Length: 404
Image (cartoon, rainbow, N blue to C red; front, side, top):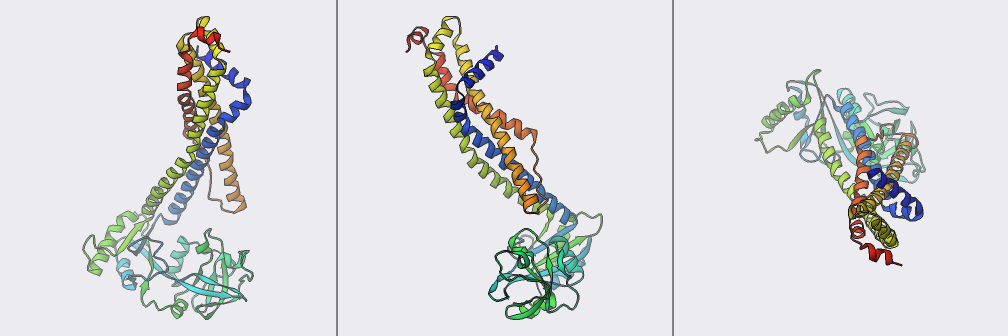
């Protein structure tokens, strides 16, 4: 019997195709937005998680208390003595550090701005920094020991269309009024701050900024086979003892990349919920549209309802016919929305991977997302058709047959 309901519902929808498509529009837009946003979010989340795991599988970051990244470019309460304490901690293999400040950079005739300047010791510190913040020279050469007045310039300085004067190896630039020479151009990282950063040796950095023994961020690499999470409490204990602090009074933070991933996922989940919630407003609009269409359908088919009741159709049969019809409106709208959502997500993936040359983003579509979207749209359709179908089932057959 239920198969007959579906057949009758499809027949009625086909007879009024334009109205059916317009009714489904809200569902289509809502499901398309939800599918595309969730798919893109999952792809981005997986890309970031994989990148973090690849970069920091054996790393620990130590920074002043607060956000690990907003501290960069400001005064720090860590110093080189803390590095020696960490170096002597059981389980630690290598320790590096860097310092960053914002400096006034100018070059060419009219190009100038305030950008991030990063100073790093050559050797162990430079190697560790290069693993976390890729330094991949695409033009010129890398920094060397003794390059006190030479720098590596970020990708945008040589390639950004908004800069009239492009930096090249052997270009001269001024940082805080002092002359430096560009020896290499770094490959694109993917964000403006890093792509407009300037790297230099610590000797050159100290001629620009009065930093004393300050350290902005310490990078720790643990011994092979040692879990970073096992080394974190040892580092914290040694730093507390060195800085004469009690537990809970730490003015520093020690984080593994697993901690960073968890923090990122929490923030990302909250943002995704908000965005999907906004997109779901279209589903509410679609539900109202289905309800309005079904009420109109009941009014237009009053006599038909009377005929069906006269030949033996029960109230339950009439209700099910209209319920399945409204459910089919939701289901078809959901199917079209899923197809559009997949297309949008794949188009964005293509633009990012091919157009922007960022191969990390990979979009996948879980069966749970697709089936859940279809089921949800079908339920919305049936829920929206409940009141109209209930009204249709209660029509008096004699009055229905007399309807004009």
